[in-house]
Image (tube, rainbow, N blue to C red; front, side, top):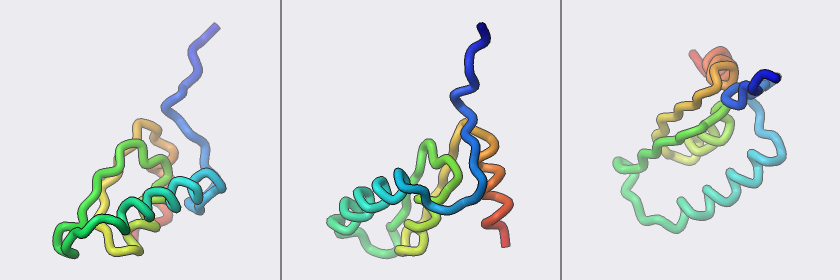
Length: 83
């Protein structure tokens, strides 16, 4: 029996799914409670998957850097988000 590749996620697009919506809601509430000057609104997302949650947080004024061990989530985010 081979070990499954648990570091790889499969995404069809960069949109938020239901679980992302739950995480975004919780994280947004916590961040809203912080008093952080706009120049210091920086976050690091470890395990950002396809970047959907981190992207939404950038729309709320946060500067984010995200990494993930799964290449296809990062590939999907890169294809969709690069200008």
